[in-house]
Image (cartoon, rainbow, N blue to C red):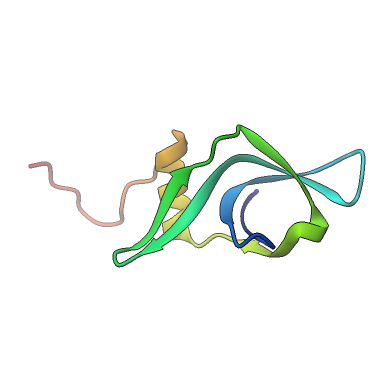
Length: 91
């Protein structure tokens, strides 16, 4: 499940959330990317870890990722990319 997570440190991350079997208070974020906001919108930057174990106390909010950010995430992580709707004409 691809989710947006905002931490108490101010970091905004996107990644796949896995609930921990060991503890209700821990979540694992797999293949996290950091979100940065610029003039052109959001940019996703590689995070220096393959996964993060986060205590829920440090999560301010989390939620579903919109289609545009999900597409960008998939492109950055090598996931399946869906083509845009409509006719695609090669140059």
